[in-house]
Amino acid sequence: QLKRVPRTGWVYRNVANPESVSDHMYRMAMMALVTEDKNLNKDRCLRLALVHDMAECIVGDIAPADNIPKEEKHRREKEYENQSTAEAKFVKQLDQCEMILQAFEYEELENTPGRLQDFFDSTAGKFVHPEILQLVSLINRERKKRTAATSHPLP
Ligand SMILES: Nc1nc2c(ncn2[C@H]2C[C@H](O)[C@@H](COP(=O)(O)O)O2)c(=O)[nH]1
Ligand SMILES: [Mn+2]
Image (cartoon, rainbow, N blue to C red):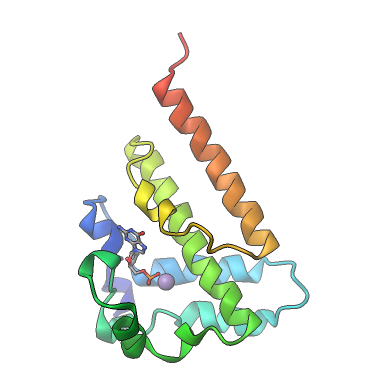
């Protein structure tokens, strides 16, 4: 079912062929698989990544634009949102990091640098894990280069 549930955030922004919720969870699982953080229970991270949006096959992929209060969204999605363990906190950051990586990739595919800025803005202050901070800064660096190249094309 989740292979057929498109990620609402991209649908609302008219992204062509938007990824599914499964696509999103799959890459998060791969990102968890390659983490070098020995303090994390990698197996638990993988399992959280693979199921964290499972509720969406029932409640749907609720985007900010749906204006459903956070408490109500969490009530519908319960447990994982509590983010009680280090692994849950890490996977929540992966959730946001994978989203901005996907936003950057869509801007590249469409050649529309900066179009999905609101996805980046909504993650401000949400990253604390060192490896994720490193990946986010790489994404931002690459994206800045693209935006600069487009606004000041080489002669
Ligand atoms: N336009 C925006 N859409 C967003 C933003 N943050 C999340 N989203 C989308 C992405 C998913 O389709 C959906 C729910 O995300 P979850 O991570 O809660 O599954 O909402 C944003 O800042 N702007
Ligand atoms: Mn998610």
